[in-house]
Length: 216
Image (cartoon, rainbow, N blue to C red; front, side):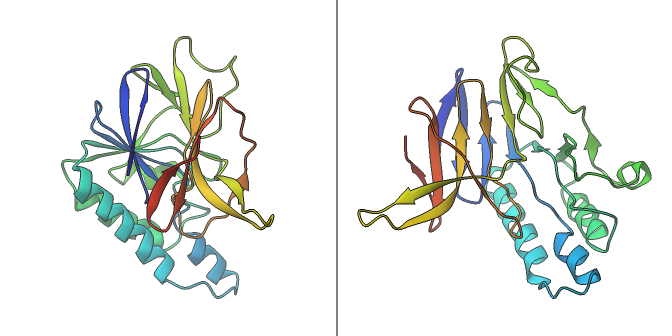
């Protein structure tokens, strides 16, 4: 785990692809894509149920590690249309009655409003301002960022490519922090990654073998 500070806020970067915001007692996650494996199985593509179990096990571990007061979900919580994973997630939330689960909606969050209304999930606006930070699903342009705030988001599923001396490379998921905003890696087990270009001033932390490693 690595500790990183932005504007006097302390963020703990966890190898399970999450951030704990110390001052807010908040756990930040992006791109869980729950139900994606069930969505593919319904289409006849064999994807193991164990993926869903692993996502919930990892989320449970993070909650037990940090004892947060809020879980802030930066979009794409649920992958597609309603399936049997949604009630599993609702039951998961019920197991933590003192914990606030809050969703900043993303492009995949297309469940009917009745599904959200019947759960403990709190729907937030697409841009949520908390102290000197604005939380969103998509990365915001400088013109979209509320004045005086730093953007934290998801959507991109960022990764960086590392090369050895022989020119062989591999892509690793990463936390990426630029001048105006930071991007969280995708939390979901069944998600891909997109390589991001890194500038000299950017701060990057890759995830490898259960560790968070600062690269720049």
